[in-house]
Image (tube, rainbow, N blue to C red; front, side, top):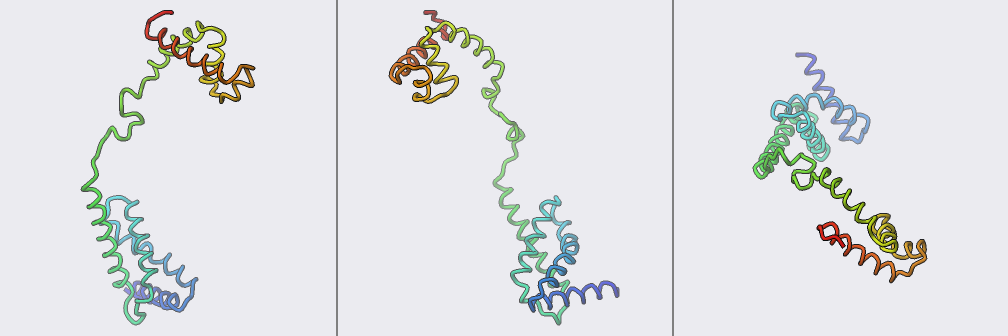
Length: 188
């Protein structure tokens, strides 16, 4: 029992020094009490992560109210009371949020909607699209390639092709109409 009382005496002295502004003593105290706090909190919380969050909350509370500690009184009960209250608060918060949460196994899927997983459909449609683009007139094909496939601005496409912005707009419009007709099955 002597070791526990020596530890408690040391912690009490460190807290008193911390209250007087000794930063090194305060840091030493915080490092020393973390295992004690963790041991108090861990049985009440299922995961180590949640327990660590509560320990951090306890340390913040201790920091805020360290001036209320009376160095003539034992420090362990003071720390345990803070830990117990912070732990209960964390359990209440978790209980409130858990009451509104729903577990959904599919929520972790990248694409839960089957319509989103269409890579095979896209590659099949791309084959027909490449053929449809190849069947366009040269000015229409050039406008589609520059503006839609390479995603150039109208000004960039105009300076690269030597065609006016208006001509590029007309060719893209006509190309898209032709592609729609061709891809829907209506050959030109």
